[in-house]
Length: 119
Image (cartoon, rainbow, N blue to C red; front, side):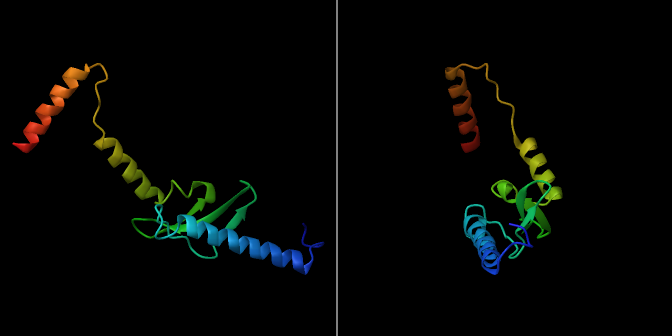
């Protein structure tokens, strides 16, 4: 559908579909959902170069507007700065696990750690 050949009805239908798509995204990813994204109403737009839709959300930590492709809404909720901080914190918090340990030895070490924490 090109602008020159589109009828009023076609344009109205396209606008209605666009608004419905945005409402569906807010219902699926917005506040009160497990994703809890704050999607700016009216920000849904088409990126012709990437051939994807994107929206503007607020960073979970600072509220900075962040452009996110709708296909990434489930995994992106922070601005670049806070995403880097969160990634570094996750990496720092991971302890190296020794895979070359027997089940009996692992259970013994676990029991010892639990006893140490309780006592």
